[in-house]
Length: 477
Image (cartoon, rainbow, N blue to C red; front, side, top):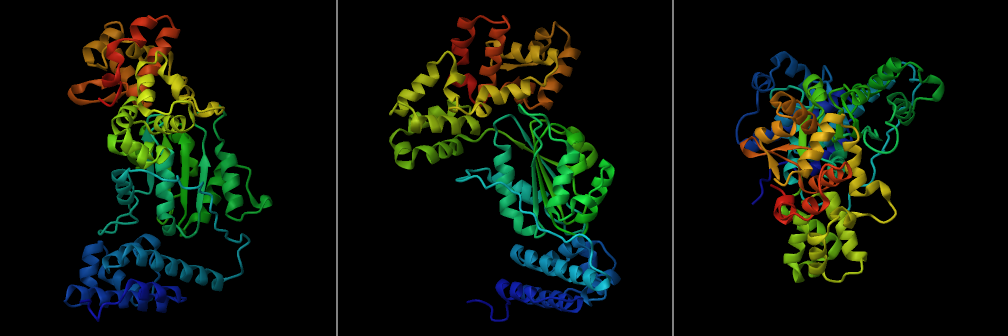
């Protein structure tokens, strides 16, 4: 039986919608404090107890709960968490707090020249998004507005991984899930760090952001530093989510990062973004290929559950032959639906025996989404010596390389091998496994083998028809 004294989240959220003043907001916080005491079956937490949990002085807690001072966004979020607010209530209370602050600004002087606008620039969520529960949970934890001790949480989230691993899909899906936490808007940019087009210019991006935030063209500064300063000033004390997709490096990202505690940035990149993690304290989330069960579920979204059940063994083989790489799974799923073969078993046999396996992942007339094109954008950014090692790993019949083999492929120089391995690993083209062994994942290895043949560094018959390059060696090691 439910507790008749317990106040529902719906009631408290509805009350938050009516808050217009600091006094009303403080009264709602005290109401939340009383409800938490009833839930625990004890006395209300004292100012000193709350202060001890938050890491503040008890005097600070007092001025917040009596309405004498409006808490900053990060401290407000910590306080409502300590008072037992649910995620939905936290969002409603945060909106109420921001409403109070905006009302105080409007009452304190003449209207600002810039009328605040709430941009909603996120591309559509990925239909039928599959899996990634662990990564989504990690994003939720890393993006927590504050911790019980009141320290600011990680505000820049770097989603990194190999080409085609589904970084953008994950970023957009998560952004749509949490956009209610950012009531002042969401900004999005494809930075074009990898692709056929030139990389996006931060100055032009900032002009677009300032326009989206309501700054007239005549008021936008020409100087880059001035643009950055105005952009960050506009975001101060507001909650905006910024999604920076397809970044080449940390230098491209930094001018676009918000600094206010209530805002957050999500960055996707094929690079591991070491500089952003080391200098800007970004939280890195590494996106790998899908587990086999989720890869099968992704194919089922194209094929239908009935067809998957009828040829489950073939579907699993197709997933393995794709290396469980999301972009390859999507391309193959589309081919299975529109292609001439009605049998998934026949398609799996065709893929397993193909000399030019990557040909089967062409996506119609969209040259930007073929696997060769996507892999090529990363390969073309490698220095010549790292590109040579990448091809050598593709040409070698062994699916993994230890330090001895790497040194051999680098002319017997272990130090040079370590340096080039770091270059490939930083580009997410080479992955370290157990026992200090390194591997090229799945279809990347086929791509490297093709390049080795093109450069005259491998014999076609030996490389692309070798048993070692079969199903077992080209799927996840």
